[in-house]
Image 1 (tube, rainbow, N blue to C red):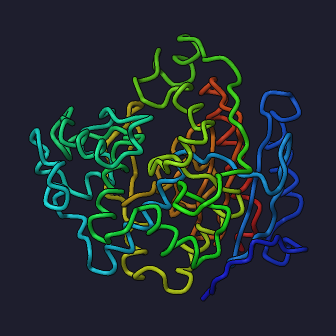
Image 2 (image 1 turned 30 degrees about the vertical axis):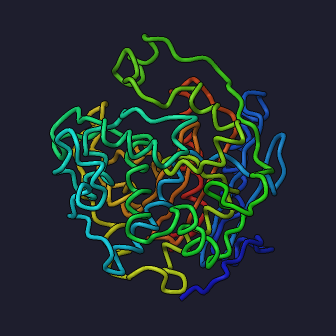
Length: 390
């Protein structure tokens, strides 16, 4: 059993934790390729095992203390708060959201369950709610009452970039009486000693500082390039636009703590959060719940490319169908690996087979989605081979 505080200091000898220095060198080479080419301004990586950081390094215009906007990698942390409630008997995934948040039930949304919200099958992927008013709870509740479903809940999968997690944040507040940000900090981040992983600004906090500014780089691929690589001629409509992502350069937007994508962290702290999930540090979660939510696939519905979602309750599972690289895990993790990546190429996962967790962050928002996807696959694949599987 690993006990908190987790060790944020990298060990002197990664080989002592079973890591291969030559494989780490190959990972370093791949991670720095676009830095050296002048495409990405910086990146930061961390490998962890046994509750310890085996290796961490920062490249480009940044320091080891620099934090990054982690976008949807935030979702796994919010999921961790929901798992606490489930384990304590304060929430059942089968509950209807409208029974917890009556404002949400309007416009025929009364049948939507907590599980459907967490699986992105609830039917409101682009429900309107954005800055600057999304930081106001009254406004959020009013927005909930106006939202309508695009399909019958549970029958289709489409990624909900931010809308679903605003609902989860409200569920946390209704069931705990706490601000969702305060609950996550008090029950998860502080007990684990994760001081650089932060979601929003609470009263009494200083500014959210030491965060690398986001930079837009590259050019979008042409329709012909998309068709050759992905079999589609245009990307689906989404709220995840370059302009929306760059909005997280604004201090007031970071201070909101957008639950679907507003966290900031070092690669070390998020890699250690995944170590806590692997080891259930300090018995933080009910062990049966933690095992279930990180291993049982509940959503196999196809995405826009026809790839099964392979979603557990709040995270994605790599799977054994040969398509783990299309889910952001690369080619070499075990089928049991779980995690949640973020926009802009952020990578975050843990592999129960090896005990390794890995994070990669960059502040370069590459508009070439094909190059970004290949970079993610290449880096993640090398990370998973850094440890001796014997």
